[in-house]
Every structure is written in C-alpha cells, then in structure tokens.
Length: 88
Image (cartoon, rainbow, N blue to C red; front, side, top):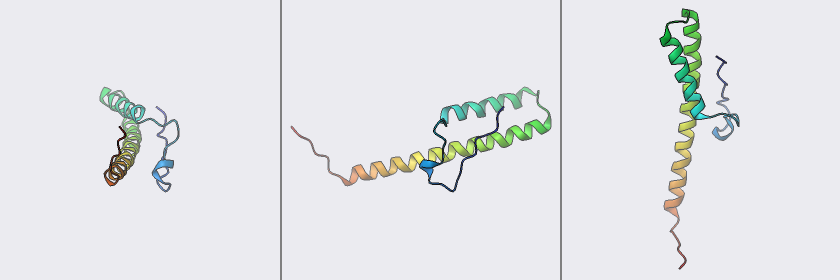
C-alpha cells in the first residue's frame, strides 16, 4: 500500500488537491485498508501504519467535501441573488 498523498492545508482549497486526485479512488483505498486490517494478516505495527494512512485519506475526503459544499452554497446564493430571465 502506498503512502497517502499529503494535502497542503495552507493553500486555498482549489489548489489543495493534485490534479489526479479522486474522491472515489481515495474512498476505495480506505476500504482496502479496512479489508487488510480485518483480514488479520497484518502485524500490529502495520495496522497502526495503515490506520494512520486511512485517517489521512479520510481527512482528504472531508476537506474535499467541505470545499465542494462551500462552492455549492456560493452557487445557490448567487442563483438566489439574480432574478431568472426567460426569453420567449
């Protein structure tokens, strides 16, 4: 299992994620870690290492979702501030 890609939390959210980062792939990685831990085939030190990686992945997902939620809120706010114009 590769190490988690660190996210630079000092940069603005739109610059935080590498271009090839994927929410779905990151969730899949967390699920893989859970399966490895549940298999009982890891040594205790490996379990702790994998747990730390999973926590970083989950933090990345949380940051991603928070950023998207904020952007959606801004879009809805912008939509509510502008009257809809229809041309017939």
